[in-house]
Amino acid sequence: MLKEERLDFIINHLKSNQSVKLGQLSEALAVSEDTVRRDIEGLAKNGLLTKVRGGAIPHSPNAHSFQERIHVSENEKIMIAQKALPLIKPGDTILLDGGTTTYALAGLLDIPLTIITNNVPVAALLAGRKNLEVIMTGGRILSDSQTTAGAYAIRLLEQSHVDICFLGICSLHHKIGVTSNDFFDSEMKRAMVNCSDRIVALTGHDKIGTSEAYKICPIDKLDTIVTEIDPDNDMFESYRQRGIQIL
Image (cartoon, rainbow, N blue to C red; front, top):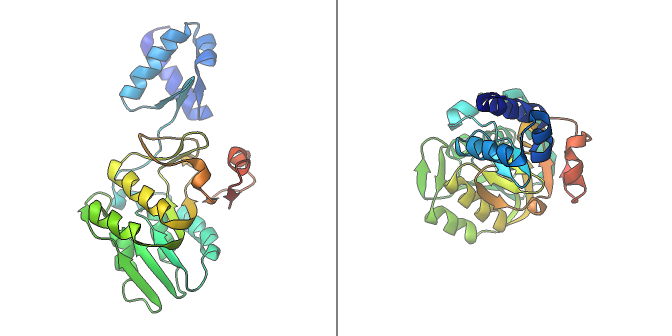
C-alpha cells in the first residue's frame, strides 16, 4: 500500500472510531508499528490529528471565528443551554466564557445574577437587563473570538470568587483533559477554573474524545458535562466513572 493510501486510511478510520491504535493500524495496513508511528507523526505535524501515547485522536471540529461558530449547530446549542439553565440559582455569581454555547445560555437568563464574562457579545446582550449585574473582564479584545484576554483580564479573575463557571469547550478527553487550540483562550479558561467553586462544561458531543495543543485543566476539575445528546450514552462512561455529572 502506498504511503498516501495509508494516510487516507488512518484519517478515515479516525473519523469513524474517534481513536486509532498503533497495533491495530499495523495489522490492518500490513506494515510495522514504526511505519505507522511515522505516518501519524506526519499527520500530526500537518494538523490533521493529535498524536497520543500508542495512537492518535481527532482534532476538535471547530470553526474559527465567533461569527462563524454562532451559526453552527444553533438548535443543539440552545438545547445544551436549556439543560444547563436549572443549575443556576437566583443570586449566584456566574462566569460565562467566550463560547457560542455560553452565548446561547446568556440569552435565557432572567433571574437576579452577577455575571462575569470575557465574551464581548454576551456582555452586549446582557447589558441593561433588569436584575443582572454584568462585569466585563478588561484586556485586549481578540477580533476572531470577540473575547478579552491578557494580564488585565486574568487579574480581575484572580480577585473574583464565582459560584459556577460555564466553559464552552473546544476539546475534551477523559485522559488528556480539557484543551484549546488557542493559547490566550486556554490562559483565560485556566484562570476561570481557578476562581470558581463549580465547573460546568458546555459542549457538543462531537468534541468529546478530542484534544488540542493547549491544556486548560485535568478532566477531574469538571463537575458537570452538558451536551445535546442522551446523558446515558456509552461515550460518557469514562466520565461517569470519575464522578462527573452528565446532563
